Picture 1 (tube, rainbow, N blue to C red):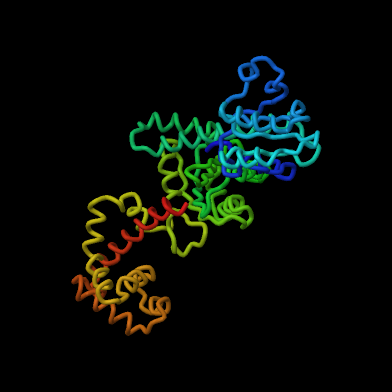
Picture 2: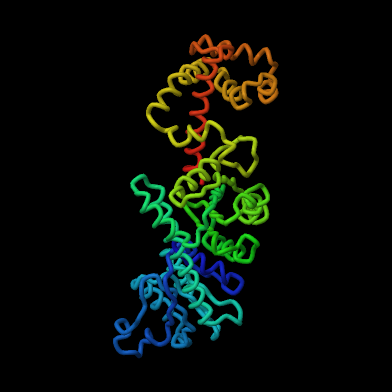
Length: 399
């Protein structure tokens, strides 16, 4: 996660006017510098003696260009050659920036911003960039450490070490809430969320929020988790992450854990719970309520699981394709509704006899009857493996 011109612009948007280079707002930013007289034509070696560098937002009043605004174009070309990310003009002299300069910056995706008001100073820009970059360095470090933790190669000792790097004050009992966002969160929104968290009742040095793979983690730990762990706490986290309902998400909550070596498992439990759709638990899903998906989600993409599921379901899907029927849809609904014919019929807006007929047709195609317990279990398991694969696949592609 990089700090960009867009993030910088978003903070001061009421004070800035974007004149050109909108396509370059994604450029990374690492510092702020001042252009004073370095590029004045009267300065000897003007292209050599400057401190402009890659990733810099350059601020200038262009006093030296007061009589010749076309010198701004020369500055833009030089700053681009140096790898700078944007130009911010404090237009105290009311310079008329040539249209040719703006068109050139647009064509190159080089943002040109103008301060549109008073009360904003160079020190504000420097503080903003330094403060936000520091926050993001921590965020990136935590995210990288979580990524390492989720690998399969760490020893128990390494898991303990990495966990302490993420949250040194982790208490003996804890859980992890994993939020899957329907829309990626902008950097500035995430930093705003951190500010909200620091002013909320959830804030504690024993807890932590981390942005990870465009999603959010909340780690809650305490000495009295048995008292705290419950719906009130879960929905407080949901309310914080959703911005009071402004942001769509699904929140998965791990089981309680009491050993630091289980931190990796806690993260995965939260992720698996968040991936479950149509679980009947609404927007907050607890890992200990997802039933057989606790087993299926970690292994649903393994060759044996895929082979088992496809061997049963492919003939049904092929029959639908060839005959324009909806047998597979019927089977999905039947399994999701816990083999309840009445609920399945209502969901499909069909008569119960129609559902029975379709299930009997499925029996004739794949040789498994919904009326025989052992065979019905195979049908149900094949469908649930299919659903589990879809849960995880959608999380990777939709977010």
